[in-house]
Amino acid sequence: MPLIPHGTTILTIRFDGGVLIAGDRQATAGYEVADRDIQKVFELDEFSSIAIAGVAGPAVQMAKLMRTQLEFYEKVESVALSLEGKANYLAHLIRQNLPAAMQGLVIVPLLAGYDPRKKAGRLFKYDVAGGKYEESDYYSTGSGGGHARATLKKRYRAGIGRDEAVKLAVEALLDASDEDVATGGFDFVRGIYPVIKVITETGTADVSEDEIRPIADAFINDWRDDYAARRAQLSTGID
Image (tube, rainbow, N blue to C red):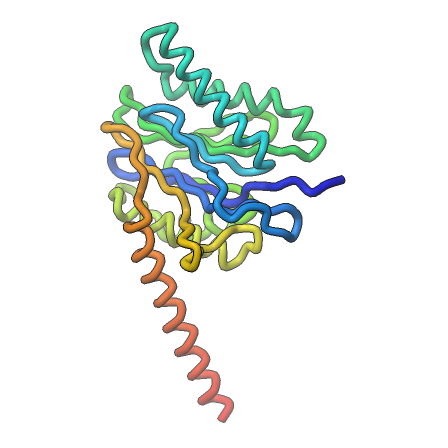
């Protein structure tokens, strides 16, 4: 059976005034890199986005289908579907994929959006059977999701701001890439960085590479300095 490209680590974080959703850029097929700059985060409409993990091809098509259906709904009804309605519709799409999931073609997305009724960001996770669960603060999934979630659990604080959430997302994705071979790191040579979107009452906005790059640089420099200090200490101890 041919190896199928899989998307890996995605995450979402709620912050004061909105919600963030992000994903690394690597897809893997077994032990090979299938794509270094795959898109895993898709804007569905002005106030919601989806991130996909699992089998890449069907997951991307699911995200595009959902975006089309939301556009159609808004044209017919002259009003956007509620965030709860979007979350329920995505659960329906995942349930439709259950026969394929039983054959190994698993899709596990995250949905994040700003709810104008509650005036807050909200985030939803799913299981392979279409079960929908709302998380209050943060979540991550995919092959490196556990490693990213450990960072989120350690660093997250209620009421953090937008900039703190971006910094936390970068740290979590870096930690995941350091522990999980399927999660793409920050490719400074090719200029490939994670996709991060923030959603607030003013709509959805991309976090620019110019903002992400220095945050990643700072973390990596700290790692390098710490590693060098530990190596020096070990060398001194042996001598």
